[in-house]
Length: 168
Image (cartoon, rainbow, N blue to C red; front, side):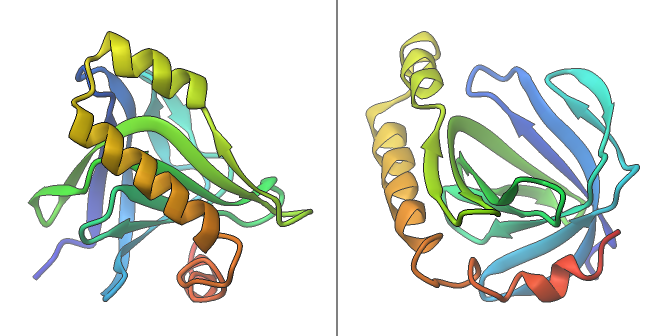
């Protein structure tokens, strides 16, 4: 039986710390594993202690090169997707991901979908030596998300809302 609490660990490609936090397992479906993070959750961001100020839901897809963070107001990003290596579950209680810098974001007020951090991706591609296959997968995931966040593709249209209602 899967654990109710999952530790989410993002690292950078060189192994450096990125994000690390506990989340509550909400559900698993054909889209992936839905995790909830409440406001007040203690986390680590870029190696420094932090506290989540606004709750969110994280979708960890089964085999995709991204994760999706779904946010309530007052966050300006309704959906924030990190381009990352496919999830590696070491057990039912821990998921590891490698953040690949690129982000695809849908703005709440305007619905604008944007690709972010291309400069960081280009810099880290050289500094960390991203293999060509990783670059191809990361860029393909970003292109797909740019369309999916804007065209009504689930889980980005409405399906996340039932999970977001469960966090606070």
